[in-house]
Length: 94
Image (cartoon, rainbow, N blue to C red; front, side, top):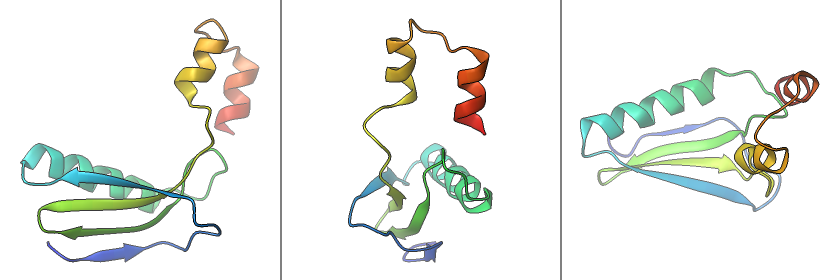
């Protein structure tokens, strides 16, 4: 499983996030494989970050992801008193 790579596109800018998993433990390996599969299978969506590449090297797995904006869902909810109205949920999810 080491030194494999999957590419699903290339970034339009140099701003990416690299998520690193230590895959020595079976639980972390499973989490990495699950996230990689989900990101690979999802159709493009403006509210889901794109995965540009993933690879494993020396007991670590790397996901190269599109950098999302500064505002996280948790921060957005906190700014909106911890709840989202149904129209806000629709806007985010559609």
